[in-house]
Length: 257
Image 1 (cartoon, one colour):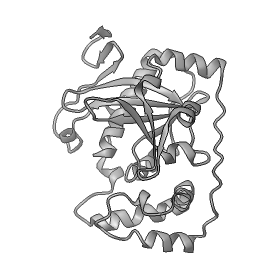
Image 2 (cartoon, rainbow, N blue to C red):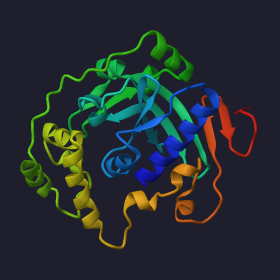
Image 3 (cartoon, helix red, strand yellow):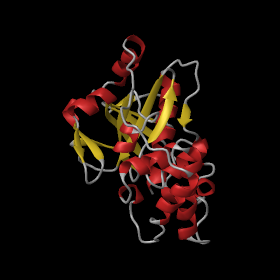
Image 4 (tube, helix red, strand yellow):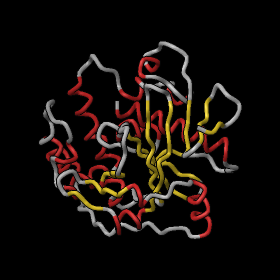
């Protein structure tokens, strides 16, 4: 379900960007589209490269959103930190998404509250900038440097397998909280070690469930799917909302809401 919500989020956001921004560059998923499927097993959010800016899209299903919660991995792992973090409210039942605002990494580090138990940064909604046009202007005029001060330990494959072995339990809910953050981050940051983390999760699920990337095959080709449509049922319908506006694939114009 987490993968489904993130896939909807990036589909609609990228569709909207291509419709409204004249960008010569392609919108790239980071570290890659295939690896996004792996990360969605453990994390909420998707990193994209948009021009010179790296942006993290973070969906939420909450009907009332008072704060923006960002998992520590997106903020503190060297190389994973982004220029901007965008909070997107998703309503799968009514087929719409709404941008609630964005924040820079500096604002999150300076004004956000860190929860050691959940390993998340929380930023009150009133600290978010609502207009995405401001983000595009900031990115061009005042490009933000994203530097993480965290130093990750060097972990061998044998050490990683030993650490991951502690997580080999089909009942675990969030393995990201079962290891020390530095060790968990070191595994995630290394593509080869990350595969070791992902493979046991597939084995735990068993043969009844397909590989997530196969299960979501084709979902990236159309802008909106319901959960049932992912399994091959009916025709999708996109709706994307920025503050005060709604865009629908079945309509030719943006309409005020």
